[in-house]
Amino acid sequence: MPDAPYPEGLLAHSEHRAGDALKKYRASGDGYDLYAATRALRVAERNVMSTEAPCLVSDPVRFKPDACFQARRWTASLVGQHMLRSGSSEPMHFSLHDAWWDVGNAARHSLVERMPIENADENWAVWMYLGWAFAPQRHASTYLSSGLTRLGLPRHATFHALRAQVARVEATGDPYQDLRTATMRAPRTWLSDVAAFSLRNLIERLESGDLPSATPFRNVKAGQPESQLDKAWQGLLRGRIQLIARLDREELDTREPLYTRVLELLPPL
Image (cartoon, rainbow, N blue to C red; front, side):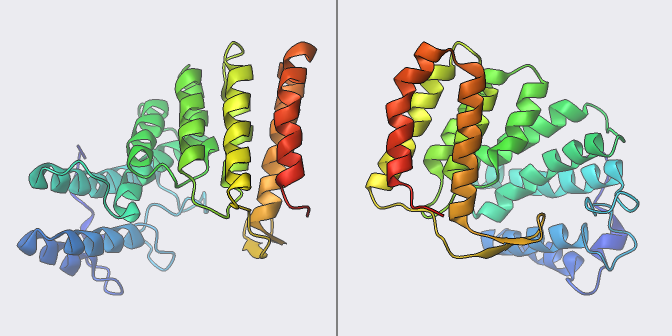
């Protein structure tokens, strides 16, 4: 549970009326009003136009790890309390579960910026896992798997990557990125089986007609056009590098037909 109320300065933010949205939800207890309130709260804590927003993770000067963690934990607790009151254990709109993921991401960024909050590693992994468990198709698996690995939980990290892979939506390159994550995080004794599972999933997708989209989109980080097909090839080749580096020759040979089949089915760049 959070240690402090949600900052009044953020609640009063007029552009998104976070305070008004929160009052409306408290009066109704309605799931849609929860969605609106959570969205307003999440926008308020990262609004670049606000001098009080603590969660500008892309700006190290303005990022305030402790304040961001507390604000996000307050929003996440609001979502959790709604589920407890309603007696629901079913997934809701993904943005509501992203409120939990955001808490872990604040903890992760506190470590990245070398301003770690208390119990940063644990908060990174636990909060991200909570959000991911209700929406396993979202978010690159490298983030949570890194946190789990830092805690000495490589099997959990591997399970996360493979579970995320089978949940991915069609026409994306994400399952291929998950191959790379799984083969990088898997304990050595698991690696050959993990590779077989992941590659078979890719083959099943491709044989069923699930092809990564070649339509370009703007990759903000790289600043260059990229497509889901680009992501797929990148993940596949990086996964291959992991297998070459970590498997012995005999094990690699047993997985070669699966890898070759993916190469045959995946459209060229």
